[in-house]
Image (tube, rainbow, N blue to C red):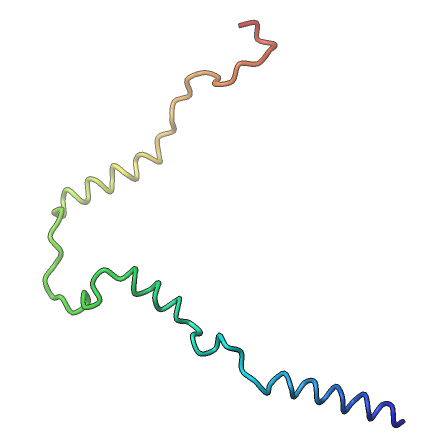
Length: 90
């Protein structure tokens, strides 16, 4: 019975010791993520800009989008086999 108490006390001490000190990386935890997000942000104050973005007009954008969508609807024409096998005789 005393051995069970000794084992329980040792296990409890080991578990408590694991929580005694914080790892060194906790002070800088998340700094790399914040640095990467900041590096990817072009204009941090961009949401406050009330001027619309200058660029393509509406009808041209609609036509470009329709042309893009049609490019997936029409299958590519197959121009023969790209791989010559030994049994074709060519």
